[in-house]
Length: 144
Image 1 (cartoon, rainbow, N blue to C red):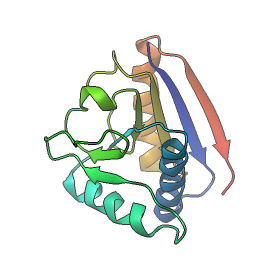
Image 2: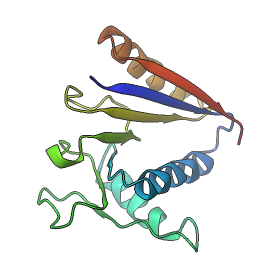
Image 3: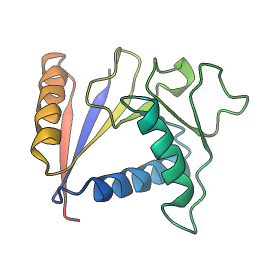
C-alpha cells in the first residue's frame, strides 16, 4: 500500500514551488530513488525537463520525458503525464492536479502544495481521495 507525504510551502510563488520540486527530485535521485514525476500535460513535463537542467549550476539529475518507450537505463528520473510505467511506480512525485490513476502499486507519493488557493483546493481533493482509500498521509510544513 502506498503512503503519501504532502509538502505544504508557506509561499504562494509557483517559482518557489518549482524550485522545491527540483530539490526534492534531486534528493530522490541522490538516494537512488528513480521516481516518476507526474505532470498534467506535455507542456508542464517539458518545463520540468528544462528546470532540472538549470535550477542549480552544480546539480546533475539524469532524466527524460516519458514518450511511451522505456529508457534503456532505469537509473534516471522519468517525467510525464501518461500512465506510470511499472519500473517507475515505486515513488511518484505528483506535480499534477489529480491523483495518479492507479496507486495500488505505488509505494510513495510525494505531493507539493504552495499557498495559492487554487493549488490548495486541488490538494484538498487529492488528500480526500487518499483518505478514502485508507492511505497513510503525513504533512510537512515548509517555510520557504
